[in-house]
Image (cartoon, protein in one colour):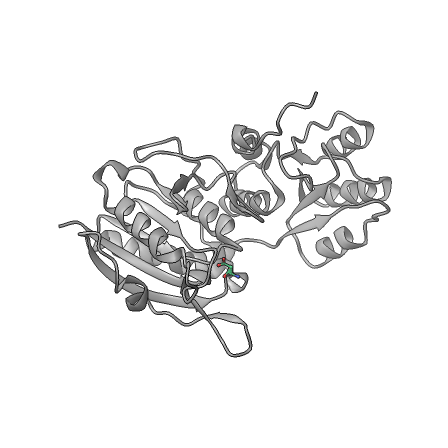
Length: 311
Ligand code: ASP
């Protein structure tokens, strides 16, 4: 019989709703797996029980350690249950740092475990079944919810669920940045831009020790002149600045004057990768000591998150 290790970290898949109407993680791994009928032997590791807004980079190292110990123990696959708010960030970090053939499947839920129409049990069933599937060897880290399997790169939570690049069980092209330790990653911030924005936030991030900044630019990669000046200062100080867009589905083309000035100031383009995942990719690249421009040229253009053609 196949054996899968289920690592729990919290999230809506594990919540019940208190008398105050607030959903908090209360369900253990044994609770979550009690009703599973997959024909798979399941071991549980209760790693954390948090809303995923509380997940820290050091927790990604703990998840990786749990995966490594499952691999050493001869498991066929690993499932990680996780809140959906930051699932795209955890999944990408794990993807960038996971090696080998062991499938690692993240799943969660959009509705609380105590809801009548809870989606967690079906998602967990799918995740365990996938992790145990011999065809999934080499698939790396994937996310499954609502019957779809996604690669981490390009995955984005929206109001209506996730959008991203779906995959099928089997080996695939996986981005990798080596065995880097998240707890040693330098500070990397995301800075918003908007009509009338200045460089106060950007300068503050640099002053706080940021070694990388993802600028959540306007449209196809633009920002106000005061921000461009801040980017110039940051780049001159050796801070890696990456241009992502605040527009869902946008492509950063830097085809306008301000965008060109940002690139001339030393900023690197994240073609279609949204700000949260650009931040993870930048942090991993800096931690691994890899050239930021090369990493983003190679991995930030995720075709399926391109905008639809505008007529
Ligand atoms: N706030 C929850 C979390 O990310 C949302 C969810 O799991 O869907 O932990």
